[in-house]
Image (cartoon, rainbow over all chains, first blue to last red; front, top):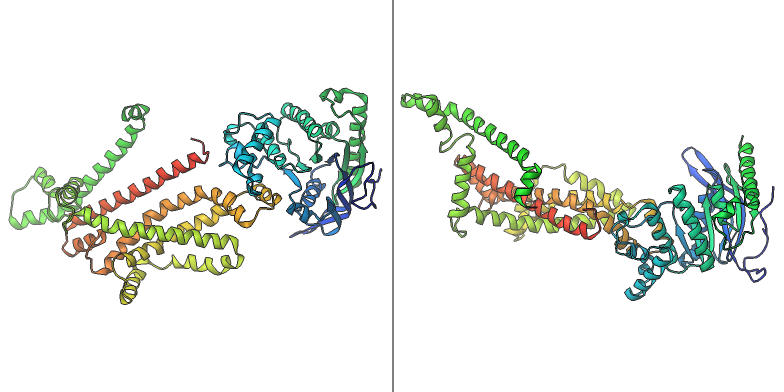
Length: 276
Length: 295
C-alpha cells in the first residue's frame, strides 16, 4: 500500500512553482446517528496541488462524497486539519474559492438555463450586462450556446449537467469540486462528457477534485487517483498517472491505461477484503 | 380553444350529463319534500287533485321546503338583474358588501399567513411557540368567535367593514401559513447546499430559492383561503344585526321563512366563491407559466 504523499508540508510550500490548493492532515469525520457513531472518514491525508485533477474512487459508503463536502465546508471535520487555499474551508467558502457540481444538476426549475448559470454572479452582485456576457461565454464552453432561454425541463439530463458545470465555472473559481457529476447518465453520454471535461480542464487550468465510482472514468480523467475503502473511510492507495493532457478516449485501449486501471481495481478489492 | 373544439374534444358532453343528473335529482327532491305540505293544503281546502297538479304545485310554492332550481333562478334574475344596484333588495349590492370584506380579509390574512410562515421557517423557537396557537385557533368554531370580535371591535369604535374582514382573516391565514411553511421548506437539500457553496445570505436564499419554490404551495393555499374568506365574511354579517350583505339576506330570509331568498343568496355566494377561486387559478397559471412551468 502506498501511503498518501506529502503529509507534513506546510500549505504555502511551493514545489516546482505549484501551489497547494487542498491539504488535509489526519482528517477524521464522525456522524452521530441514532444507531451510534458512523466513522465516515478516518485519518485522511490528502494534498491537491494547483492544476491537479484528483479523483476519489471507492465503493458506496467509503466517505468520498463526505471528504468532498468537508473540503467545501458542507460538513464539519471532527478531528484533524483541513485547509483550502491555505485557509479554513469555511473561509474558503466565504471567499467563494470553489465551484461545486452535485450528483444531480440541481438547476432551479423556475429559472431558464442562462439565469441558472448566472445565479452565482447574481448572488455576488454582478451587473446584468456582466452576467449576460458570462452566460454567453460559459454556455459556449460547455457546448450549450443557444440554449440559454430554455428551461431546465426542456433539456436532456446530460445537457442539464453541462449547464450545472457552466454554473460552477462562471464565477471563475480556481478549484472545481465534482461529486459524481455523470453518475446518473448513460455510458455514451458519460464518455462524451468525460472527454469534454478533460478539454475544459486543459483549457481553463483549473484544479479539480472529482468523486466517482467508475474505474475507467477515474483513470481517464485524473492526474492522481485516490483509492478509498469504507468503514471507516480511509485512503488505501494513491496512483499517479501521466497520460498526455490532450488524450482522447482511445487512450483507454493502451496497455498503460489498463495497467493503472488494474492497480485501482486491486486497491478496491484489497479495501473490500480488509472489510471482511 | 373554441367552444366547438371543446365539444369535439368530448369533455363538455360528460360534464353536461353529470350536471343534468344533479338538476334532475334536485327536481325530484323538491317534489318529494314539498309534496307533504301541498297534500295537507289540498286536504284543508278539500280540493280534488291529480298527480300532475301536485307536481306543478310543489314546484311553484311561495315558501317551499326545498325550492326548485328554476324558482331560484327567477328570484336571482329578479334581485340581480331587474333591481337597481342601489336598492336594498339588490343581490348585487349585498354581494358587493360581502365581497369587499372578503377581499380585505383575504388580503390581510394572506399577508399575515405568509409572515407567520416566514417566521416559523427561519426561527426555531417561533415554530415551537407559534404553531400550537396557529393550530388551536382553528379548532374554535368561528360562529362562537364572530359575535365577540364584532362586539369588542364595535366597543372601540370599529364598525362596518373591518370587523367582518377580521373574521375572514382569522379563517384564511391558516391555510396560507400551513401551505407556506411547507412551500418554504420544499427546496431539496442539493438546492440548499448550492446556496451554501456561494455563501449566499439568508435573505438571498429566501428570495432566490425559498420564495420561488413556495409559489405553487402558496396558490394551492390561496384557493382554499379565498373560499373560506367568503365564509368568514358571511358569518361576520350574522351578528351585526343583518343590515347588509349576503349573510344579512340569509338571516332575513330565515326570519321570514323566505326559502327562495335564502337559496338564491346561497347560490350567489357559491358562484362568487367559484369565480374567485377560478381567478386565483388564472393568476396562478399565468405566473407559473412565466416561471417555466410545463404547459
